[in-house]
Length: 273
Ligand code: HPA
Image 1 (cartoon, rainbow, N blue to C red):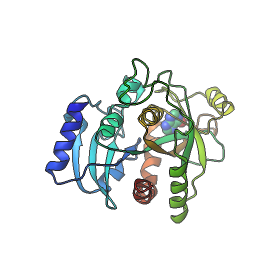
Image 2: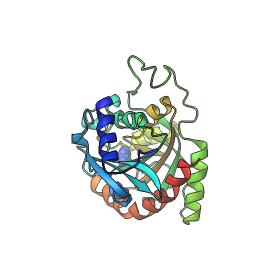
Image 3: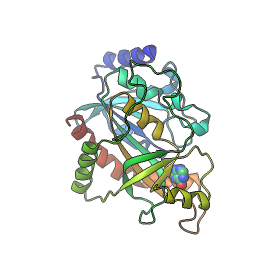
Image 4: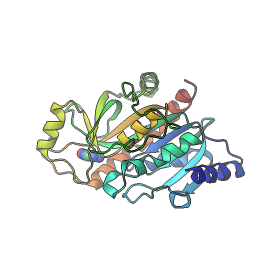
């Protein structure tokens, strides 16, 4: 991790850039924000020691460091998922490296299936809390006391203050953004209708295959997190329609403008909060 952090620091400072204080992780089909930064330095994941490569379709696999409305920001265009064969520890490698470089706030975005019947494909939903059904935790194994405590509190895994900021930003853009509980499942198969009924009963509004490892690792390191889901589809069985990854990417593509506008507002606001 030291070598990864040094490489990033070297590339960014050599290009005259500032070290980031905010990180934004972009989910499936949501990579467009990466090209919105000014004066950006692009580092493909394969050039960073230890950094897992993105193998998922719809994930670019590059770290972009640049300015978002004057705030030095690191954008992770593409992430590592458990369904690619990565461990939860590998999934949080990038967040841990960025913490070392001084990042304090994280925005996690994802594509998710809508379990809550009031959600429509194309909706943005603010994540208020999560349920971890991945069967893995990135903090398993010996604790690195330098990163954080053995038993970190998770009562506010998604910062209340950041949620207030995000709601205000959405309102200023005229975008409605309800709150919901995100459940992470390992995938890669989509859920059965019976599983979706079960997930609804246990309190989930959204289902996806990411985000939770990063949110846990960020909390562990004392970082504040904002989570935004893009509802790309009704979860299985909510409507009489089959699910496919192309639809997920297509809806993500349609929503990118709104998400970019929202992130442009939110990033400077959370950096100053
Ligand atoms: N289920 C799980 N993950 C997802 C879905 C879904 O319906 N849509 C986008 N990611």
